[in-house]
Figure 1 (tube, helix red, strand yellow):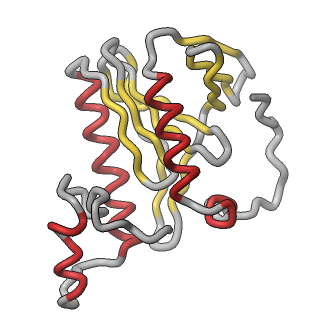
Figure 2: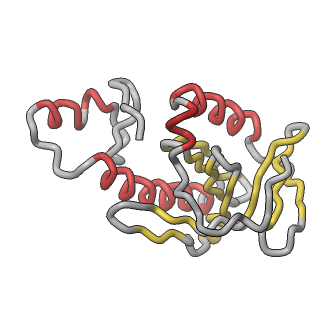
Figure 3: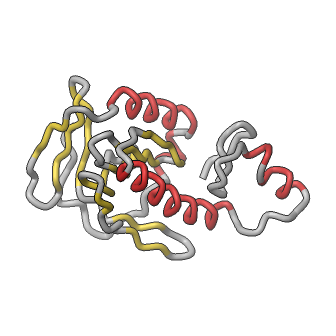
Length: 177
């Protein structure tokens, strides 16, 4: 995980800037958990917040490490991972869906259901299960694209390459974006 900047949102999920939250605790040696543990708690917390925003019909886009979480006014919500363009739907029509995430002390495993791409300002998804393709209009593609650019600037290519664990078997579906 990259170094967090003083003016970035704190990793603990409080919503405050790092310099006003855990930086002072870290400098005093009082940080209650590691950055990795806080990130995992923060991911689950952010998923719950984005599901709530979808339920309320609020459009919201949130960056967290290499992840982008967003909700739409139609009540849909997604978790995206930018290094492999993976995505999983978190809410549909305002109803929260089960989150396919397994956590261990060392890893976060997400059962990604789709590959995503942005074409002509439309959000395109391709399902891993049946390889069906859908174009979804009305999604905040401009904000998602801008968030992707910011994340790619924030992390080096080497750091982005270390996001995924090596698989024993090759992925049966290759992304076509």
